[in-house]
Image (cartoon, rainbow, N blue to C red; front, side, top):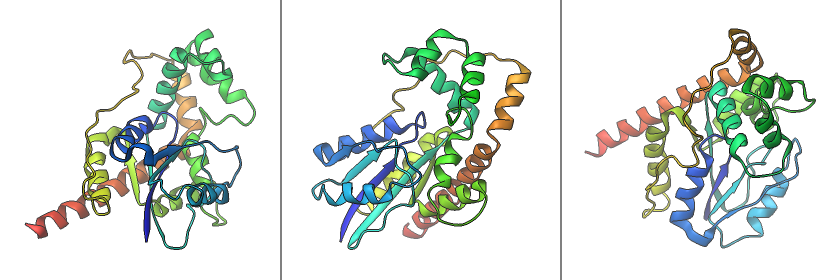
Length: 243
């Protein structure tokens, strides 16, 4: 039975830190790629895993659809969630400093935070500032339900759901889960690629708009917090039995 790690790297959700840990442990057996934006590229993900039989850890920003199922392959799937408002602030700070020629990065350099958010909300099909996390999660279950219900349900399909605001606690769980399959796996990493720490002040009107446009993400994040809490309680209970 082959065991692999599949990291769903959501933008500005501590994914760079997780990739650093995976790369440190698995060296050239950590690989990454990106996929075309579709509602379901799980078959392409499956092909990617099968086409790289020596790889152990796989990471991508653009995986959609249900976590693939592969014969004789144990897939440890991981995803991190973040308070949606903090994630959007972090994305803005990151894109202001990013040295790339993309629409988002150029916009962030040209306007203040409020104009950045409003412009992105008005752009057709842009989810960077509108339920970014729940939109992605909603693609990961075939259930016929509202997006928020699909997104919350999809969390149960992951081997581990991490929370950025509980990063150190999540790393304890992360190490424990991976050591069950890879006994020498170690977490030796701090939170990397963090945006600079200056605070951004914005109007009460924008604050209300952000909360209204990210209500699904808030629900998903809270569900993720509860899932992490249960996982940590289970881990502590098992540790207590072992001693």
